[in-house]
Structures are given as structure tokens and as C-alpha cells.
Image 1 (cartoon, helix red, strand yellow):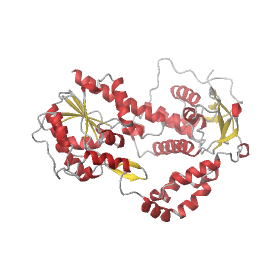
Image 2 (image 1 turned 60 degrees about the horizontal axis):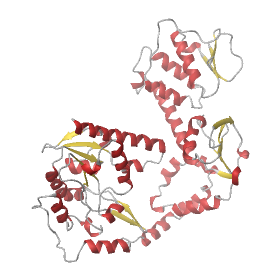
Image 3 (image 1 turned 90 degrees about the horizontal axis):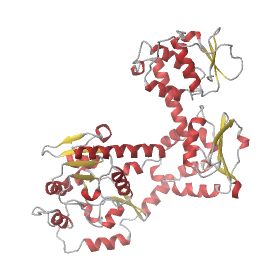
Image 4 (image 1 turned 180 degrees about the vertical axis):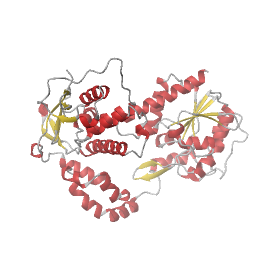
Length: 488
């Protein structure tokens, strides 16, 4: 029997619980096919009091079709705390029988209301992921962690799988006023809501976390209004780091000045030693421009003394392209990173490992491809002992295009793959919206065809594992498209 039961005398639908989407969907479909008007239906949550009759059977030969977008939106809105959400969704479902494009009418009051409810649920899901703080309550084999959170909507059941993926190896419970989630490393279960007094006040790791939080606080990037928008004060009472925030904010300006004063003005010593080896003092200011190079080997040698833009001064060495002289495909990235700058080879860092793995899955042999960058020197900002990647500007991209054009003229590929916006700008001479044009092939004036996609480093910057996996899958699909293009 379905979870939703219908009393035909009053048209009252009784749902099993606040997030009984399956029950609502089944009852709503039967009601709509039976021609029951929205104003004739009342939606109730909870057990007991059900009528003797189940939902009406849909008329033979009749069917109900709604856009997938509405189904996805409804599944999210069911988690909203507004008791009128069930009626709103049924009214929209009823209207879509005659208005199949209802969701595209942005000015419609019910469409706007549904959008706001969906957005509110998604925001609450994000806040829960950001502000849940676990505290240890036992040690050894009985080690367990407890967290307390107060959501605005009924999101616990929908959000719990995220915490299972994130904390799969530890036993934990998330307590909330409406529902509690429990994970024992093998099974996810739910229990009725709890009270805040059921959660522990603190644990031994609290002091360590506070020390860590205080040390990673970056005063130079403080934007108080934006911080309070993303971390409303209603959540502060449940965050162990909250007592530190006022003092950190008050001292941000002074701390920022001190941080700037301590910032190094040159790379670490071992970088300077490598740089001295690659940039001899006797090198000319312009060096060999490679105009007479008849092969990639000669062009790479000429690029070692490149001075076409100021980036050479702080970089360890020129990081030139790598691969055969006659590849069918050339991959162009943005610029070398820290590891590439030291090794002198492109795509050997974390993004390069993602790139290699995806190429392998797509069955593209990297040894038969040519891999290079739009900019050949590492541009960075020193931060302590680390060198943090800094995006090349238009002038640096244009200055280095000399070498890229020479590489393409010598390799004569069938296809160029632009990995990211900087590579696309270098290849096409203008800023390209990669997100919108991803997967497209653009033909240049010289006949060379450019396939547009993201840079693999974009995947590494995604924090949420599910989103990261989805983006990696999309990148793999792009590489499969490249392989198919080359096969034709």
C-alpha cells in the first residue's frame, strides 16, 4: 500500500512524514487524473485517521506527463518547512496539464514562490554542511562523535548521505530538533528529534581546533558583511570558534599590516639556486627569438633564454612544450605551476596527474600528444615558503603567444584542445566564455581547429566530492569527444 492514503469523502491526503515525496507524488498523480480540483484537497502529515478508501484509481487510458524540472524541484520543495508546500505543488501540477511551460513563466506568483522555496532548502542544506561541528564523546573501540544543528527545513534525511561520504570511517550522530541521523560505518539510520542538552558541550580536540582556526584566519581577505551573510549569527551559538570571531575581526587591520610586512619579496633559496643555473648572467636581454628554428628541439632551446615579458625574472626556468614533432592533437594549458617550474616539464603537478588519468581512461596515449602552455613561465605570489599561482594577464599571454604560434606551426596538429580560458584566449585572441562554449570546436583564420574545455585544475578546486566527481566525468566526456573527433 502506498504511504499516502486518501479519505474520498473529504479528499484528505495523509502523508507518512514531512518528506514523504513518494506518497505525495503518487496521490497527486491519482488526484489529477481523477479530476480532483486543488481546492478540494487537504494535505496532512502523520499517522491515524485515514479513510477506508485508498487513492482513486486513474482512469483507463489516461496519463499525466510533467517536465523533469518540476519533479526535481518538487522533490526539493517537499523538504521545506512551510505546511502549504504540498498544496502549492499540487496546484502547479494541476495547472501544468493545460500550461506545460508554466515553469518558464518567471513572473507567475506560484512559480516565483516555488523558486524561493527551492532556493531556501538548498541554502539550508549548504549551511548544514558548513556549520556542523562534531565533538568526540568516547574513546577506543567505542569512539563516537556527536553534532548538534538546528535546520530551518526538513533536510536531515536528504543531507545525511553527504556526511556519510565525508566521514565514512567514523561513527557519528547528527542531532536536530526534527530528526536525528546515526552512522555506524555500515548503516545509516534515523531517529526522532532531540534537544540541545542531548549533545556534548565540548571535547579534548576543541582547543586544537580553536588554535588551528585562529592561525588560518586571513585578515587581508576579511569582508565582514559577506562573512555574516554566509555565516549568519544564528549559527554562531553552535560553533566552537564563534567566541574568537569578534576579536579576530577587531584586530584584522593590524594583523593585515603585520602580515604584509612579513611577506617575502623573493622565492625560497632553493628556487633561487635553480634559477641561477637556468638563467646565466651572460644571457642577452632578448635572447634567441626562435625565428630560425626548424624543429621543436631547436625552438625549445631558443625559449630557454626568453625575455619577452617580465615573468622570467622570478621563474626558475622556461617550461616548454613536450611531445612528438608531428602530433595529431596539441593540448594547451594556462601556465606551469610550482612543480612544473622546478621540473622544467609541463603537466607534472596535481592537475597533470588528473589530466594523465583522464586521458588514460579515454584511451588517448599522451606520448602521442603534444602538451604545452599558453605562458611558459610560472607566475606566482610568494606566501611564506609557498609560491601561490597567479593568473597571467593579457599582456603576458600576448607576449608568450610568439612561442605558442611557433609550436603550432612546427607541429601542424589536426586539433588543438584549449584547457581553460587563458589557453582559449591565447589561441583565439579574445576572451572566451568556456562554461557556455565548452565542447565546441572553433576554427581559426589559419584553419586550425580548437576544442574548448576546462583546465583539469578546476576539478581540484571543487571541495564537495559529489560535484568534483561529476565535473571529472564531464571532463572525461570531453576527452572522449576529442578521441572521437580524431578518429573521423
